[in-house]
Length: 256
Length: 342
Image (cartoon, rainbow over all chains, first blue to last red; front, side):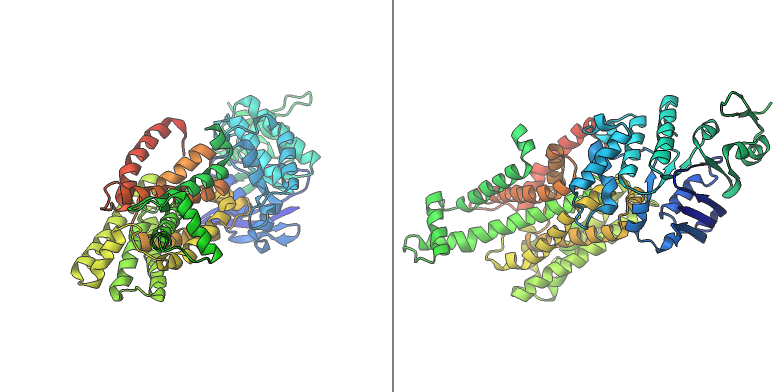
């Protein structure tokens, strides 16, 4: 689905991603972890075409991402941004319908099919009841679900989420990631999600990429990446990984 | 109120029709609806007029109607482009007057008039182009001054707009003061409101305003997407740079054409979109056409008042819109502080 090879990205002179490579398959959740400033958001911005790719290549269905037009790309890659500063002007329904933008004609006319898909996206994210409410009056958790619904309405096989749990209470973090994993597996979406809470990773991700200082430090199944020595090096703080047994995911804690 | 909220186009078009009829009826001579009907019938049916109706015909078709249409087009242009600037900059204070586009257009227009007094058809067609050039230069300078990295803070936009606007106005005044004869007439032209008579100015302004407003109405969906910021707009597949260039070009051309023939009229582009959003919501596919229609109504009303309040003397329309608009705007600002954030 999405193959990243030796990807480098820079802001002006400063290189923020260096030689990053991984593969993301349909129906898979890839968690991207790493300390602040490691390049998680930059990766999402580069993959969604907001930042130019300086070196290496991103291939989507075997074709270089740079060969896609904006519209073609948006039909294949949807982004769930962090829910901050949402405009006051729109209801939930109008916001989710905007996800159909890359499928509309140049006049932006909506068809019955567009509305069906938006309605399905509301149902899938359990936000139907909010449809008529102004989007800026919702709680953080509700807003994040609405942005997820907008991305679903985009009908793109690849979905990128930028720290969707950043400002949420724990219960909303869990239910949101549960939903994301369910969507990936049931709708066969290729999902990349930037996360900062290491203890949520092994619970919801099929695969983990660990970034530090713009480089890929580790890539593999959660059990392979969540190792005390690997994490300690990346986060520059002594960490330990405790196995709880009984089928429970391991827990990452400060060491000592 | 409920009916108004439920019928945005019905209400707006009805109001416009009523004001247009009132505006051509009222003046030094009152034209009653019966007489007006007879005059239209005669024109459309090609029947000869009675001698008694002849002067009425002249008043209606060569004086009042073209003036009303010019006022209507000016209001539509200012309100439509104001709504578009506000949507593009995601800034409720972006009005063609406040951000300096109108003053830049005025400077462009006066510069063109100083070359040669243009009262021929092709001369008239060139004035809006010069105003357009002035408007584009102003918008470029204001954006350059106001921009902080990738954001456009409201305070910066207004400060840069006021400064650039004052500069352009000062240049315009100096130019007119220094020149003799013909250009002095430009002063009257620029400050006088829609006082040109006859259909020529209407014909000159119509293509620019028509094309510009049509483009802005078609860009409504794109402006909706832009409300989520450049980055999200891009991720939703919008060609952000192209949309921005199109909106600026269309809104500046529309403003410039209005300014070139009606002078600098403030607050219409600010207040009409505000009220439209307050009553009918913030979907730009509706905000722009509704601002266009209601802007036309507002200026028709202002023009009517300008002609009648201290008749036979006329008040420049810009003075009226500022006298009514500034307090209204302040009230809106106070009210909106708690009601909605931008």
